[in-house]
Length: 127
Image 1 (cartoon, rainbow, N blue to C red):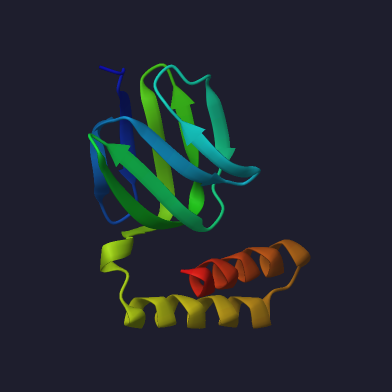
Image 2 (cartoon, rainbow, N blue to C red; image 1 turned 135 degrees about the horizontal axis):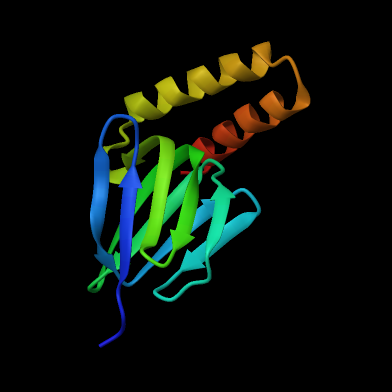
């Protein structure tokens, strides 16, 4: 039996996941990252994308936006500004998220804000 990784996914609204898992694939700011038990310590910002949790032969996926991840000896913690299970991410919620991102893009005062808004748009349109 393989070693498990303690994983916690937290958003301002709730604790979405807190369990021992086999692996987690996270959209880090520098690229996608696979995290397993015994992973080297890492702290990274998140980029908008899909976080995938594998546990006991099942896969659960979450849309995340903003925040950061912390891998340490205790496991992996993802603190996301916004997170929702893809199964709960209805067409209406996607349209609302797209509208908010398009408004942010139109009102962006600097390149970093434009980039962040465009990443949200690209991610949601790809779902």
